[in-house]
Image (cartoon, rainbow, N blue to C red; front, top):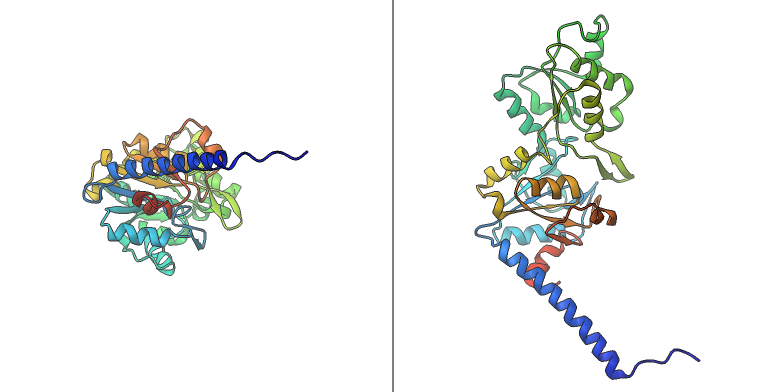
Amino acid sequence: MGRRRPPDILRKSHAHTEGKARAKARQQLRQSLDATLMPDERALLIDLDGVVYRGDEVIAGAAEALAWLAAERVPRLFVTNTTSRPREALVEKLAGFGIAVDVDDIQAPADAAAAWLAARGVARLLLAVPAPTARAFAGFDTLTPDQAIDRQRDQVSGTAPAIVDAVVVGDIGASWNFERLNAAFRCLMQAPQPKLIALGMTRYWHAPDGLRLDTAPFVSALAHASGAEPVVLGKPSPEFFAAALERLEVPAARSWMIGDDIRTDVAGAQAAGLKAILVRTGKFRPADLTLGIEPELTIDSLADLPRAWAGHA
């Protein structure tokens, strides 16, 4: 005998209860946003890769969400750990998605690092960064890892004077090999020990062909081997978030970070005093929600932000 269907009144009551629960959840989300993201006094820091786009494809609805933020005059700044291309290239990429921004609307690690190093009188750099990103360091005396290998051939590690004042590490991906990583290590082992500068500490990212290692694993290897303490000038550094908020002239307590990385975006922002919204796009994995890091809000994508605010989700 087949399963008996419940009476219509029970089915209707069950559906009504579920509908009320969903409506209540939407209302709570809207109230939370309304209470904390008022356009005249709140600011948003927005990650790019994994939030606005993934690889060379825009996230569905992201362009419309950003247009809504602009219409609502919500102060916002794009904050990225991308070191594979300069900010000008990111502006061009966003324009291809129909998203118009200026260079000054983006904060990237290379520019922050160049300013930090210049302020401390650092002159000679080993740059383990992509060629386009190296342009941010045009005012310094720089070496590539391959040039450092040539300089080190006649040196004995640990005894010769340091050939650079700082080793700057970004995401050079498949360009890493043992010789280049070892050249950076040898620089860090010379005296006086150069500074180790990390253009972010992102562990991995979602490339078109799947997950790829980012900057953090290589910085961690160099730090572990040399004993140098990395200076992080990208997310999740509190200084990076503070610099972004200073540009927006909004305090951390009235600001939110939207990102797809539970550690770099969410935990990093919270440690800097911001609240955080996690999106289920980009590198997000369901297991992220079991790590003990609790974003104030979790939404499916950036596209859901205006709908949630307006109560139409």
